[in-house]
Image (cartoon, rainbow, N blue to C red; front, top):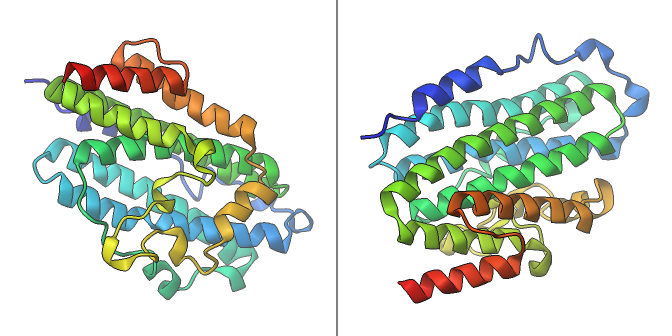
Length: 279
């Protein structure tokens, strides 16, 4: 039996973990370079990051059979909640009137419907890739130096989380074979084709509870449900070039994961058809 992944992942993430006190240059704050518009986006990002709470509850519920992955959730949940915390700390220091209320945080904690664990794993792997790119772009858009530094820290965490998910995906392929490969290809196709969908595709913007529809996305439960599209289109300007970077990174990782030449959505579509034919 292969060794558990959690112990080594814990060590690797522990080595690069940053501190709110030591690694955020609070003293460098420049109030003249922070607009009200920018500060409001910090509040929305903080609430969105808080949604790691219901995601963790979902992961633990749907992976009761997998103590290794469930243990890794302790690290992922801690670091994701720290993202929410550092953004709220920024607001507490420099825009206290915008600190999210407990009711606003509680609003994004709602149950997600059960789903096949391998599909959820792939979905969140793609979500980490997307968040890394979103936050890198946000770091470029913001003009206040402390905030730029915070978004860079968070973006790097999201990239590391994607790498950890990838390790669990490799293990799932060894254990589940072609059926798991088909699930990964299906979700990869969905998440890499966001430009075709005409809306941002990320776990926080997907419908996850049929009984609560249409208020069953994290974004729909924010104080301003229209914020995400405005943030992407008009503020950080996450354009086609940046969207292509996300799609290319998803396809590159699938190519390595499947050991197959997948460079475009068409390649992935053809690969899925071959999997169906073989099944």
